Image 1 (tube, rainbow, N blue to C red):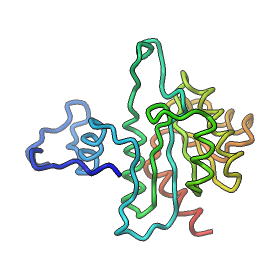
Image 2 (image 1 turned 30 degrees about the vertical axis):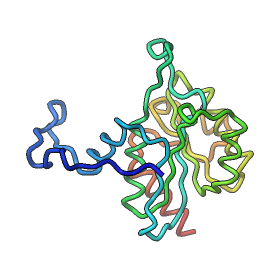
Image 3 (image 1 turned 60 degrees about the horizontal axis):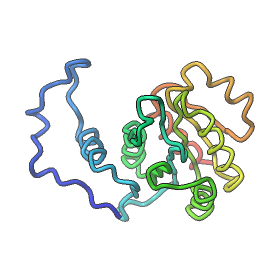
Image 4 (image 1 turned 90 degrees about the vertical axis):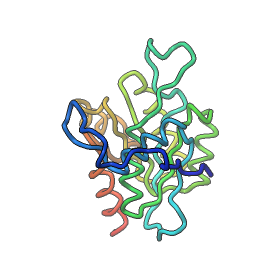
Length: 193
């Protein structure tokens, strides 16, 4: 397990100046996720002090994010996925983040992870550059864990959500836009059923 970052040297939230773009101040959760991102914790698990209502696995496909600017041996961390994990944790929903590109995992290892972790929801992040790897990850997820709800999200789906759902039978849902509230509500609705 990765220990949480320590905030002893961090500024109190009320002394941090507002964002120059949005005018908002960071929340404690955002600051925690930003500091966790610097160390890039490979796996996050909900603390045992919470009663877990549902298990969600958020993953990046084995190819990760890629584009010409990252083609020289570096990877782009997914801060958005960590924001989603924080939103789920706040609602006492168990979450595990699996960056298959960093761990590193191949397709068989990712399938074994889906089978052994037994998540109720599998979320896959997608950019246009990595969409084919993400589609394959969704197919692997549905084959390894057919009873899981496979949901995809990320920048690629801003204009392609309906098209994706109509052409990929192994995808159960697509989130277009910010997913912190949507994914939490989805987990709560599936839990209620």
